[in-house]
Image 1 (cartoon, rainbow, N blue to C red):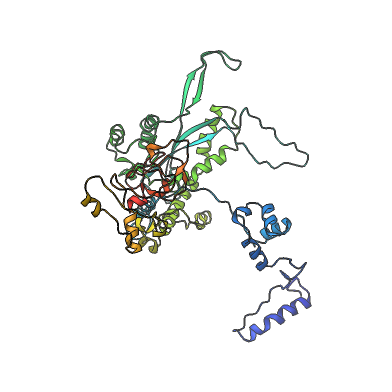
Image 2: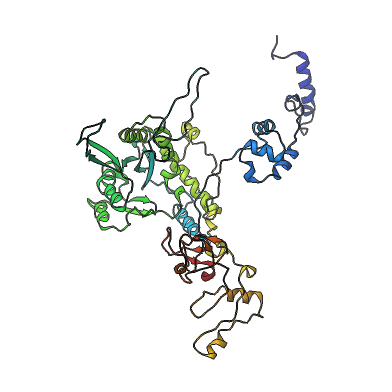
Length: 508
């Protein structure tokens, strides 16, 4: 009787390799097949050769396999085999917001505020996330899988640069289930478009004069978002919110200029009417990864919406709202768990955004009934709070322009007192050179450095801090010289295009 589907010789070979381990348990035997990796054509490029070839190529020249093969000398087909064998991997790099040291400190403190004393993250049952996003009628590129005899679809538009789009404001919260996994609250409060319904002013081949048409708002201002909050979001929260979680509700929004202030009188009156305790809270600047909608829910809605055909604005609005309702409650709950992982990684990166999320296998844990309501935060990240002194760029004495004698127009005694001793140590020279310039001081500046009032916005000037070309948009609040926005601090100042900063030379 045959117990194994192998021949006698195969069983004998396996037993011969495993026998030493049976006689002596301390011996580790490999009784697996020795053909895998040792059969077939010999590899032309070893792991060491591949590593040396890739290290000799700039990262910018490794964007495609053809470019990689051209600069490394490895054939394109061999490079493709290396990708399949996972000797080299493909990575998609995305742009992330530029964070100032003050942003990192604020992000760290914000994430740490969600960690309870027992080390668990807050369950976020009292949070409502709101945000806006543009949804387009069609995309410029779309992939299809066709049969050999099938013709590719023809997609036409009048302009690929000006595709019809509509801005929506979404409002979501964390879903709730009972002990039997029945959904008590799906968390999808609503999705509203910024549109106007107007009557047609003249006849056309498509409709007669006076027909009501839906027009998308091309510019969304603060009064529009305030109207959405007062007429739709706040009443819908009060209508659908579970009463047992009514103690306090926080509406989280980003720092976009169209968003209303937290202490707006009309909003405060509407949020506290009827014995409700609702408030608005701004999330930290430059932190879209700390909002559930930007973190993944908008991408899920857009993925479903792009699978539906839209011929006009009304179709687009219907498809977007239908995709919003079509998404499962579990998907929304998963993103809240992902947000907790993002907060932990933000604290581990000391407020930065250079991290990679680990896989939690949420679908598998949910199927097995082991998915937690909230995650446990690593205690090691709770003691890594960044400071402005640590994260800010350092200014060395070698990079500082030399300090010349300071002259004044008041008296000779004042001139003598304000004279800098150029024969002092390097440390004294650095401390003197980074002192803020005032009207009584003349400091050597990089060639081309100008004050904001002395230059035109169409001509590049030199940054006072790094001596690199810069468009005269941002300037130092103290010395008035033009500088990059990342060559200064924005702590305590209003952020935005054209807003002043406190340059590192004046700040130190």
